Length: 414
Image 1: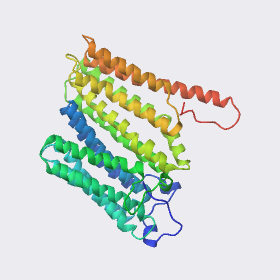
Image 2 (image 1 turned 120 degrees about the vertical axis):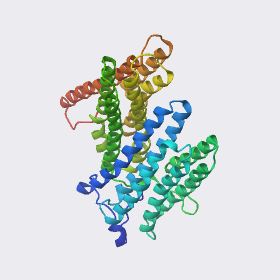
Image 3 (image 1 turned 45 degrees about the vertical axis):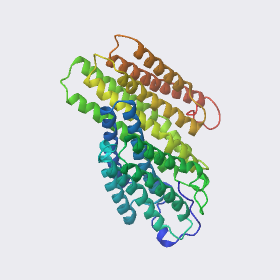
Image 4 (image 1 turned 45 degrees about the horizontal axis):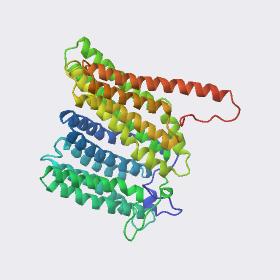
C-alpha cells in the first residue's frame, strides 16, 4: 500500500523513514505498546458477539471487526515504512492510539446510541493518520500513493458519518457496509483516483519480514483473548467436572490453533515474503486480506470457549453449534488460503479437517442427546488432529529432504 523508495528524497522525508533490513526491520517496543489498544478491541468484539449471537449480531460484529482490522493494518503498513521511534511518528501513533481506544470502547454501542462516536473515532484514525503522512511527503514522489489512499478514505468517511447520522438500523448497516467495501476494494484496483491514476503492487516495496512479524503478533493478541476468556470463565464459576472438561477443551483448542500457524508455517512464510521480488503483492493478499479470516475464527472460537464453560451440559442451541464449529473452520480455511497465497496449492489435511467440521455441524444439528461440551470437544479434537498431522508431515519431509542432494526446499506449500 506504500510507494517505492526513490533515489533522492528530501531530507525531512528521509529522517522519518525506518532502516530497511537488519535491526531496522525489527518490531519496536512502541509498536508492541500500540497493539495494546487492539487487545481491548478484540475483547470488545468477542463480547459483542457473545451477547448478540444471532445472524444480525454476527453480521454487525463482522463489519466492526473488518473496521478494527483495517485501522490496525493501515497503521502496520505505515510503520513498515516510517520509523515508529522518530518523535514525530511516535506522536502521530499516540494520536492513533487515543482515537483507536475510543473507537474500541464504542464497539458495543456502535449500532445503537454510540454510532456517531464510533464513526468519528474510526475516521479520525484512518483520515488523521494518512493526512499526517501526506503532509510529510507532500511534493515528493512518495506522496502520490498516500494521496490516493487519502482520497478513498475521505470518500469512505462520508459514508461512515452518514451512516451514524441515520437512526434506521438497516440503513446504518447498509451505509457502513458500503464504506468498508470501498475501503477493502481500493488496494485491489491500486487506489485508482481521478487525476492521480493508480499504483501497482510492484511499487509497494515493503519490508516483508516486518510485515509478517506484525501480523503474527496480531494473531498472538487474538489468541491471548481466548486465553483471557478461558481463565475468566473458569474463575467466575465453581469448578466441576464438566466445567473443568470445558476448560481443558478450550485451552487445548487454543494451543492447537497456535501450533498450526506458528510451529512451521509462520517462519517459512516470513522467509518467503522477505525474499519475494514483489513483497507488496504478498503483503496485500497473504497478510492484509487473508489474516483477517484467521482472526475472525479466533474471535468466534473465543465465544464458544466461554459458552462451553458456562453451560457445558444441557440444551444444544444452534448459535453454539455455529460458533463452536465455525470458529475452527474459519481459522483452518484462512490458514489454507494463507498457505495457498504464499506457497501455492491447498493442503489435503486442511480440506479433510474442514470436511470433518462440516460433518460435525450436521450431526450436532440433527442428533439428539449431544451436549455443548461434546460438540466443543469434538471440534477441538479436529484442530488437534490437524496440528499433529502437520508435525508428522513436517518431520517426514525433513527426513526425505535430508536424503536428497542439493538445497532443502520448504514443504509448507504441500
